[in-house]
Length: 93
Image (cartoon, rainbow, N blue to C red; front, side, top):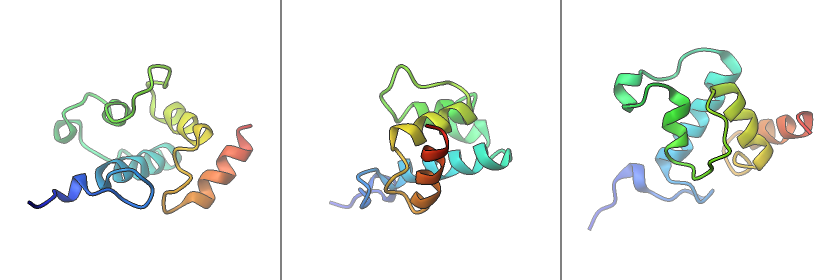
């Protein structure tokens, strides 16, 4: 039985798809550039696509606030740019 690439579990414990969503959320929140087309994700906003994968009712619904919230919660600690996430979390304390 083969596993879909999107469902592959990475070193961080997230699936490949979840890691890509978190990376794209960071890029969109820090640069302001739209990272995906809502027609592709099936959600009206990119933040809603990310919220679909995290089980947190208190999470903000906007991209920048969601990114800051996830950084504070440590969601980015194991991801490829974890140094940036640690710096952001220290800055937002």
